[in-house]
Amino acid sequence: MKTAFASFLLAAAGAAFAQTAAPVAVHGAWARSTVAGQDSTGAYMTLTAREPLTLLGADTPAAGIVEIHEMRMEGEVMKMRAAETLPLATGKPLQLAPGGFHLMLMDLKAPFQAGSSIPMTLRFRDAQGRERKLPVDVPVTRMPPGKH
Figure 1 (cartoon, one colour):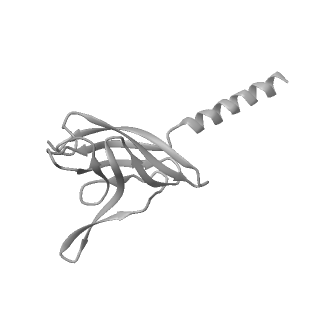
Figure 2: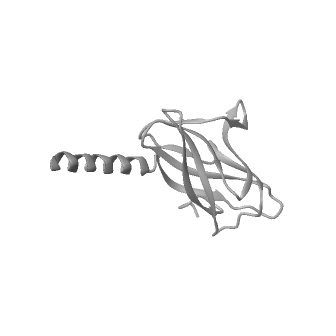
Figure 3: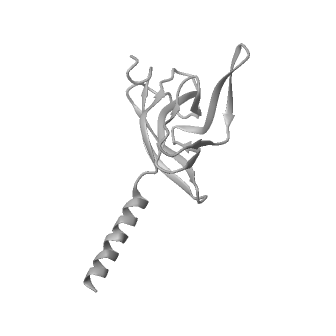
């Protein structure tokens, strides 16, 4: 009986740990600094999902609007368009980077100064249709990390 109870406790503890582990690893997060009067900027990072997920968007108190955007060449012209969602495959890094998919922050509440950081919450939908949230601290810089 004691062995069965101990096994139950271990299984319950493992299930609780699995539910609290972050569903996505975030690497190299950064947001581009702005100048006075600029009301939008981009945020970039690499996301690696630990399970199939869909990026729904993000929220931050530093901006009124956050959208997923994609930069794409159409003929000879680079165009930016909003994307509703972005799928993440398990274990495959998805790079949000200048010139590709990124998070567009608009209606900024104040200029983004290099050396500061902004709080952001990434929103995902899992395979069961549940919304998952992941808080991220995003450093503000003029250039991507390692490119100075």
